[in-house]
Image (cartoon, rainbow, N blue to C red):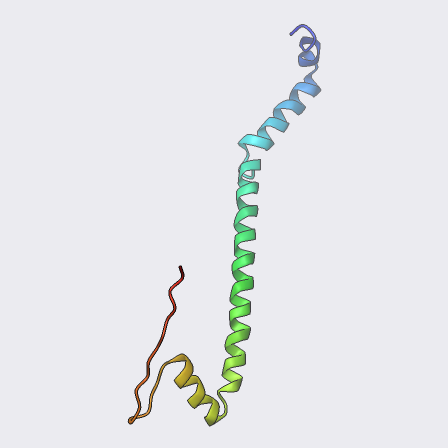
Length: 96
């Protein structure tokens, strides 16, 4: 304790220490807020990437649906539409 006492008498070191503690822990933009905001930003960027990939896939499907034959294929394969004289059986495999 005696080693630190002369440093605490110096008003510049004391003021710097108080300022450092205040900005690190007590300020509105403290270290914990910065870490939390960085994590949120990373999660939002991942979500943005997923949405962009989904958007590209949707645009690709929309471009394909400009043709009538593709509309029928899409309706039958993805939406399980059927003609009046046929039955549709959907088979799902269960994971073991």
